[in-house]
Structure formats: structure tokens, C-alpha cells
Image (cartoon, rainbow, N blue to C red; front, side):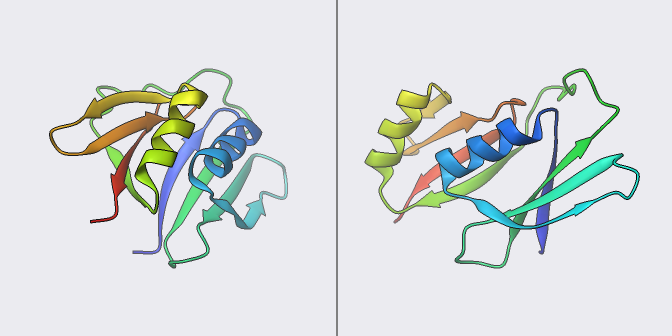
Length: 118
């Protein structure tokens, strides 16, 4: 796989969230000549898979994510430190102690699963 796409309402807010919460940084971007869209690809500097954030200029209302029964998994080096930071950010939306994982949600309410190294 090459990338996963999420369409976001506020590009700057989403980029700031992903950098702070998951350490993702901009790798490259593409802007439509007429300004209709901006694609920003984020990476962790480790693997080749990227998160593509798509911003559409004419979109003014939040996206309907339906039941939002999808998520993207992220493995973290220090699970306890990540949990503490995400707790302070107020972005933890579900915890599953039985499985030893928890979920955070971004500004558009997309869910990310946080998984410890095993």
C-alpha cells in the first residue's frame, strides 16, 4: 500500500493534530492550479506508507462519517507516554484495556488506534 486518504475540513488544524498526536510531518503536497484542492502527504520518517489529507476549497460543513466504523492503527514506542499526551490533548475517544489499546479521534472525528510495541 502507498497511502491512506482522509478528507479534512480544516487542513492546518488537522496537520497540527497529526504532528502533535502522532509525530507525522509533511512529506510533500499538491495544490490544484485553480486552488480547488490541496493534498498534503504526511509520513513518520520510518516507513513508506503516508497519510494523505485532502482539503477541498468549496467544502464548508463537516463530513458525514456515518457510523465511523473504520480506523487507522499506529504502533507507538512508549505507550504510557503516548496515552498521557493524548489524555492531555483530550483526544482519547475509546479505551479497550482488555486488548491493551485505545483510540484517539482527529478534528474531523476520524479514529486512530494506538497500539503498544509487543
